[in-house]
Image 1 (cartoon, rainbow, N blue to C red):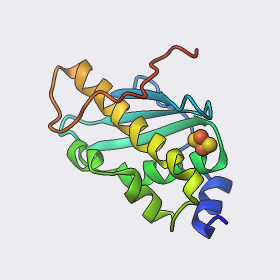
Image 2: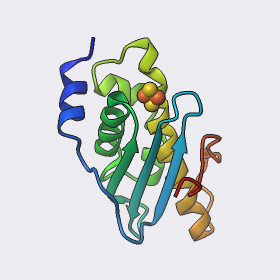
Image 3: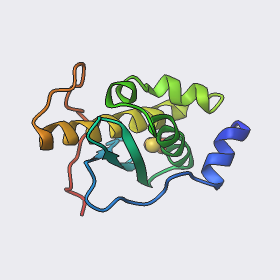
Length: 141
Ligand code: FES
């Protein structure tokens, strides 16, 4: 049912944890399954993502997609990170079962929410970035 890559990222998640004083942090949730994902970004003065960490309270696919998403955006520019879609995350994981597609969407939204926070904090506009609807801020804390 799950690809080897999904199992690998689920069993050995990359970049799990948090970043102190992040450039941007975004928390998103899926109302139906109740899963929550948070992404932390450390972005340098050139707009390059130097570090990224995630925390996911959710299903195995959510853990695997968060982990893969962090790998895909690390070292990228803000614009490049914005272009990392849930499709790209799924492809990098060699696919997900249809009922788990929304988990990858959470990863995309978490990145967007963190980028949004970064843009807000710095008073900049990231072209093409909209405020993620699934952003639940810090409410669950
Ligand atoms: Fe909802 Fe995976 S079941 S994020």
